Length: 180
Image 1: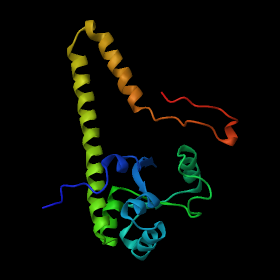
Image 2: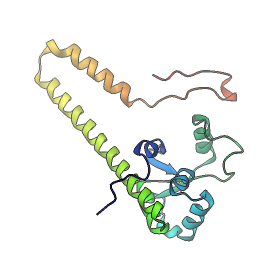
Image 3: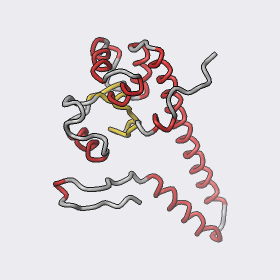
Image 4: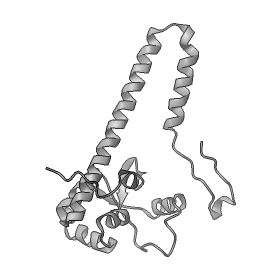
């Protein structure tokens, strides 16, 4: 049925998924790179088919979102990337791209990206199930295990905290942030 070889390593795709506006998204430049086309070609195809991309499928970055991303990622250097604000595609938007871009490579990459998004959802569900089971165990056990559950709660809370920025911007006057 499908080809068993993976056209793009899963880790590469995972590293190109960002959390913006509370949604997991991929940027136009990253998708274009994965598809083997120029970013302007991808944007042109999207603009020609803009009705297929409502705001829950794709949105354009605001200037402040783009600057924030640029500060967080060493690969987004001023002058190297487009002067236009990037498009951000949600999982549904990436799926819709497969109907707009018809190359073999685009189709294979889209299949791989859909698998990564599905894997992310599965991991979140497993994490949620584990937390529910821990809560149930807490209710059923006595005080002897109190310290164990406090430790587990602490570990899970640390996992949920967003990573802070590393480095500094000119506005921050060389303030360095530590990642926990």
